[in-house]
Image 1 (cartoon, rainbow, N blue to C red):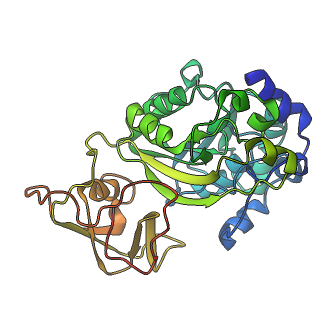
Image 2: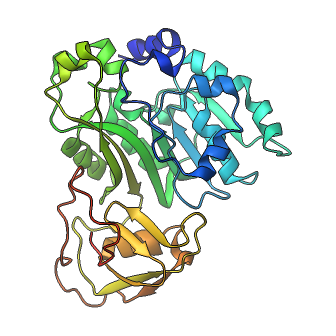
Length: 348
C-alpha cells in the first residue's frame, strides 16, 4: 500500500484539481488570520497540497511541532510563521516528489517570513516508523497531521510513536477521515479508494480504542462534518458507508481517567488567548465563555491546568472529594449533534 500511495501522491496527482472526491480538500470557515498566513506560502507548495483545511491549534509561539505526512510543506510553512523564529516545525513524508517541492522552498520561506535563519526542516520516512528517524523522544510540544493517518497501514504504530515523541502535557492535534462502520478489505485493497482517503479510514470506535491503547486516555473530538462523495463511480462502490472529516486532540497526560469524573471543579477563562477573546473552545463540547464559571470534570481540569493553557485560566477546586460521574456527561461518541455553542453549562 505504501507503493500505491507514493505513486498516487507523487505521480498521479499533480494538483488538488486531480483529486476524485472532496474527502481531502476543504478550507471551509478558515479564520481570516490563517488566510493571511497562507498568502505568504509559495504557489508551487500550495498547488501540491491535498489536506483537510489547516490543522492549527492555539498557542503556538515558540513551540516545537512535528507534522506527520507533511507533503509539499504547506502546513509546515504555515505553522512556521505561527511558532515564530524561536519555534521549530519538522515535516515527515515518504514521497520523494512531495519532499522535493517542500525542500526547494525552505530558504524562500525563511526570507519571506523575515527570519534570520529558517525554522523548518523535512525528513523522509514513514509515519508508522518514526523511531527510525533522528527524532528525540519527549521533545515535541505538538504533533499535527492533515488527512494522512488514514493512509498508513499501521495506524496503531503511528499513535504509539507519536505518544513517545510528545512532551508531557503535549498533544497530537489532527484532522482525518473516519467511517461509521468498518470498511471491507476488498475496498481497502482498491488503490483509488485508498488514495482518495476513503477506504483507509478507520471506523471511529476502532480509532478511539487505538488512541486509548497508545496512551491517550481521553480523546477529544474538536469538530466534524460529513463528507459527500460527488463521484458517481466511487459512490457506487462505497456509498453504503458514511464518511466524516473530523479533528481530534489527544493529550499526553499520565493520570487521565477512563471516564469523566466529578470532583466539584470549575474553570474561568481569562479571554487572553489571541483570536479567542470571547470564548475558548477546548473541543466540541467545551465552549468556555470569558469570565464565566464553567464546571468541568477532572480530565478537562487537567487538560487545561497541566498543559500550555494553564496561564489563561483560573482554577476552582481540587481532587479531594469525588462526587461520582460528571453530571450530564456525554457518551464521548463523535459525529453527534453538536451542542448549542451558547450553552456553557459544562459537559464532558
